[in-house]
Length: 439
Image 1 (cartoon, one colour):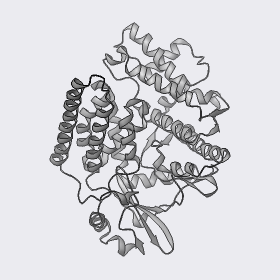
Image 2 (cartoon, rainbow, N blue to C red):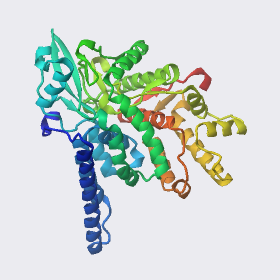
Image 3 (cartoon, rainbow, N blue to C red):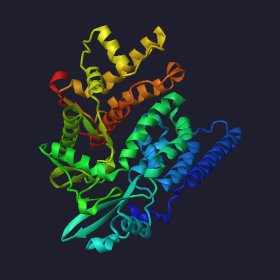
Image 4 (spheres, rainbow, N blue to C red):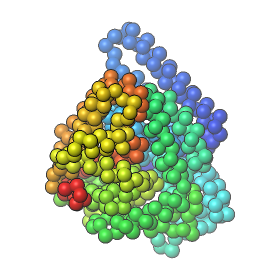
């Protein structure tokens, strides 16, 4: 797929260059609004679809040239389906697979810096073009002594521009996400922390090994080996996992049994991480999974891992208990602990927000309340989107003076939404296991 996109000779690296790119995009988006309203004067029935379309085009184009955190935020927004108008979702979903790749001389430069040699001196063969380009790095295929390898190279400047990029993304995010500033800053702090970790490839290798080993007993999962002698802070070399992305695999028309097997492996993988390891692969977008022969699921990217604090874990999952048989004062304690309510709230706000979060969590917890759950049920997803729409347009939320919910919840919610979404794409029915204390 990456071959079809024009390669990029350079990435704007300095703060000034990157800021200029954001400003020019802001001006384009402003121009799109002006054009839209001019057309609307002539044609009052014009809806915002074409405006969203042009904005999405322009924003995606500039984010994909900047790469890094800016593109990553677009990718996260596209996963949070109820946050964005459809035009943005469609465009930003591309960030999961296909950013314009870097040209070969830039790749060689990165190798020279870390190994003092070009890739062709290290491997028997090395593809000059990227086989896959995403938000933080791109992947090339190499061979060495008969082994097929995947070599992931981080884009230059990404690690150094995380913080400044996120500041530049703020005005877009405020406009697109319909959030107040306090809420957004709360959100951005957690995003920044994860993104900085994601640019540290040595940390990624360490976590990949740790989680792969801890999950090696789970049936129908496969993890690559990692090669330290060809890896550094900005380069990762691992086994090439042969197979198809979920979308391609579904086009081969697999049986329901196959879909259930892959879905079950996914569920078991996440169950073990969340409830037993208390750290989780928090980036369940389709680009991170490969389906192999015999319906085995290959896990290819551990860049984003969220460590779950014990007190957050206890509070969050006790709300998922089926009948929520928790005494009122215990419930209040959990709501305070998870930062859904605070002492600044009026009584009316406390009642309102407790109601909303109970509803939200019981909906998220629905699959946990059955022995098996059929994720092909689109009605369940409609309910989730409806609730999201209703909340984001509610006056109480809009005028809230503070961010709602612990920042740890951001990646845990994202993990479960992402997991449910994947299972829905697979149309899988799975046995929804849960820890004993939740039964």
